[in-house]
Amino acid sequence: MSFFCQGIYLFVAATNGGNLNLHGDRVSSFSGNPDTSATAAPKVYMNARVEKYASNYIKNNSEALLMVKGRSVNCFDMMDSVFTSYGLPKELKYLAVVESELNPNALSHVGAAGPWQLMPATARLLGLKVTRKYDERKYFKKSTIAAARYIKDLYGEFGDWLLVLAAYNGGPGPVYKAIRKSGSHNYWKLQAFLPAETRGHIKRFISIHYFFEGNGSVTTLTKTEMNNYLKTLATIKSKNNVSPISKKDDISSAASHKDNTVLIKIAAEIVMINPLKLN
Image 1 (cartoon, one colour):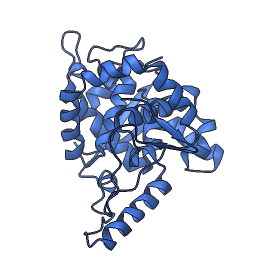
Image 2 (tube, one colour; image 1 turned 135 degrees about the horizontal axis):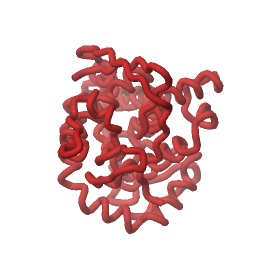
Image 3 (cartoon, helix red, strand yellow; image 1 turned 90 degrees about the horizontal axis):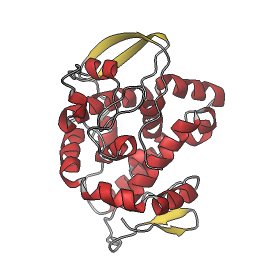
Image 4 (cartoon, one colour; image 1 turned 90 degrees about the vertical axis):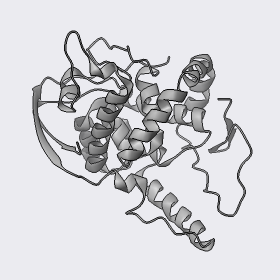
């Protein structure tokens, strides 16, 4: 990730495999049998803009992805627990694969470290201890809690998971700039105004998500797409006499709830970090 600052940045922090089968503009599950029951949640299909990239990415990095998958079981269970406790989608754990391939000792040339590639100043502001001899960014659970706090704040700021992922990579500044230039909050309409590294970051996240899940989630959708998906899901549940999902109960909406607010001031240069990533 990169932490974006220009002059004094005011930041409001909320709360302490297999092969993909491409079919036209959609990607289907690559393992298991599809659930055709009446109450099955509809598939979250891959955006057509990412299909070719995802297919090539997974093909070219299959060996490395399988290695990551092999060592992901224990840490993914922990991440699921942390994200759930913060009211965040569990699928956000795949961001750590993009950032570091789940390597706790990953270190970028600009000083971002750990599985979540946190900069020292950012880590300290999120409650981690970072000294020359002791660095909690390299501890899976502690750094995941810090990342969850930061991600939750970003969701409160943007209300759109693709924009959150973009801001985690390049900072909120470039995202706001892209919104102004494009006149849109839709990621696919504003992406052309984002740095190439950030665009690649989003495509890698989506690719890795589908590699692990064989399906998408709210984290791979724009805000409008997510709301439409949740309406469809609520309709299905309602027709089958299942209590519908309310916006208040939805896990993505829960992420926008702020238990407390801390005003953080940071003075720094603009820093763009290229996260450690699969080729």
